[in-house]
Structures are given as structure tokens and as C-alpha cells.
Image (cartoon, rainbow, N blue to C red):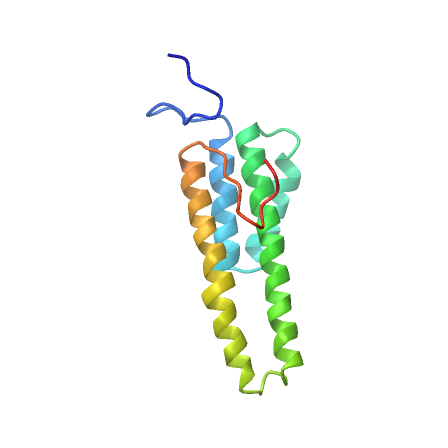
Length: 135
């Protein structure tokens, strides 16, 4: 039975662009968890260098991770604006905003990144819900 284009590669088979897809997802997680900013810049460089020449699987993951990274930055900016509007960083509301941000937005983005990494490692495309670009 022939495999369809959206099927996973057979056991032991590596899909074209799978390494690049895994790298994009790993850099997304590095940006969120280990080296914010640095991970994004490396991901952006990877995106700009490979977007036109990469296989479809890699392009899918590159676009998704870049879009989700931009959304993550925007959500962090919104959290900081909320802190400033609620009285600044010395206000008791600061911790309320920080805890809500980390338990909802940040944790969700990390979970989606782990799901994207698992899909990339399986050689499958993945679309981030809400923050991802159409595939």
C-alpha cells in the first residue's frame, strides 16, 4: 500500500527536512526556556537562511515556530504593559499578573512547543493552535 504525503515516514526512515524541523522546534523551546532572545535570533537566522530552499516539512515547522515566537514576545509585552498599568513593578498586582502569565500563556506555549518537537521528530507537520500560521 503506498504511503500518503501526510503520513509519517516508515520506521528508521528520515523525512526530507526532518533535521531542520527538529532544530526549529528545539530553538523555539530554547527561546522560551533557556536563552530568551538568543534562541529567537538563532531561529530567525535559521528561518531566513532556509525558508526558500528547505523541504515542505522544514518550512512548516520554521513558519510555525517563528510565528509562535512572535506571539510569545507579544504576550510578554502585554503582561509588562498590564503590570505598568496596574501600578508598576512595586505594586502587589505585579505578582498576580506574573503568575497568571506564567501559568496560562507561557506554560501553554511550552506545551505546544513540546508537541511540535514530537511531531517534528516523527516527521510530521504541525500547526500551533491559535498562534500558528495556516499550513
